[in-house]
Amino acid sequence: MGRGAGAGQGAWYAPRAWGIDGSVTFLPVLARARARRAVTRPAGPAVLAALALLGTGLAAGLPAAQAASQQPAGAHVIPGGAEAAAPSTPAGSLLRPDGSTASLVTTAAMVSGPAVAPVGKLMTADVMVVSHKALPADTAAKVARLPGVQAARAVDAARIEVNGKFVAMLGVDPSTFRDFAAGPTARSSRLWRNVAAGGMAVSYTMGQQDKLPLGGTVQVAGRKLESLRVGGFGTVGIGGVDAVVSAQVARSLGFPIGNAIMISAPHAKLASLVRKIKARMPHGALVEPLVSTAATGRPAATGTVGASAGGSAASTTVGTGQAGSALTTAQLIAMLKAAVSRVGLPYVWGAAGPASFDCSGLVQWSFAQAGIVMPRVAADQARTGPAVPVSQLQPGDLLFYHTDPTAPDYVSHVAIYLGKGLEVQAPEPGEDVQIVRVWLGSEFAGAVQVDPAIAAQVAGNPVG
Image (tube, rainbow, N blue to C red):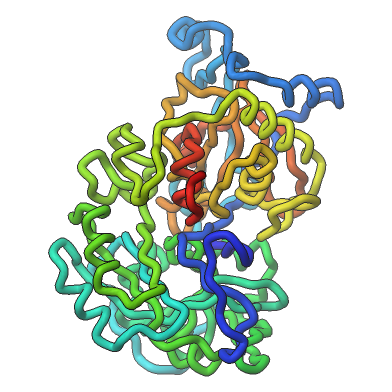
């Protein structure tokens, strides 16, 4: 689960008649992550100015092979000859140096409530349908019968205010929905029993970084203001889903009933499946892939970074935009200048500038200053272009990380590569936007060269 996008691009709006003053996001919209501590900080304005003016040739230096031969054993070679040895585990991180997790889902004390079915076979959420009103009752069953579809679950979806911040929330049947969650979260029966009993489960990052009281209550502004118990911190692993409640609670809050469908189709050709689903949806319903596709056209492995696991970005997009175009030099310089200009401003979970940022908010804002539309969250930003090998990194490429212990394969943090082995990032609460050495430890998920056409498609905006 992760912070939802703000009203506007790629969102539709829930009428006030539902008591929900906000919008439901139809694209996967981010899980935030705990970031790494700073390894180094530039000495002063002169250094920042130089970095802001970096062009596409900044990564010049020793060829990767030559540089590798001169690095100490165990070091990671960065284009330009810089070195970034894997650091020790950051303070407060739940990840051990070997990549295993010390603690996963965190739940409040067990509460009495309805029984919840045991976890079954885990499924990936590959496609999501969402409408501004309830879908016909048999819609999910029709989708489930399509070739290649493993399962389709009707859910309630809305963006709603929790403690004064809008978050993307699903109303679900815990017994049937838990199989769609990331493994550690899916297997936490206590968390799902708490949801069934009327509590709310929130993403690990939302709970930790927004300082929500585990076992305490939060104020949720639905049809009327309600107090909901925070029953657990556990990321579902579906981009943009910040919180989960039971269908009964969702309807009490005023959610539209069954206005969304979560679809697992790990062996289907996604582009073809999306077209078939759209043909069966009422006017205005949105059908969006939640994952990248491999060169075969099928969903890529969970946590894959890049528009195509096979390397062909153009073959993976769903829409009419033309893929394959990189940033122009002018766009690149404008974006890098914008990003570096934010150094020293505070990290705030869910913030997207101009005076405070979370990790993906910094990326979205910086690209916007160059006229490039980007999706709001890291999980989506990881699908905005082809994957790039570390040995071929160029300034402006995006670096992604798996940092959420409750969803180990979920892309949950992003930084912008500056060249010379440095990146700019918005790290975590209590720290400011900073320039640090690129980190290639066990949490590194991969890098992407942003394609503006693909980025606009993922953001749900027309290209042009």
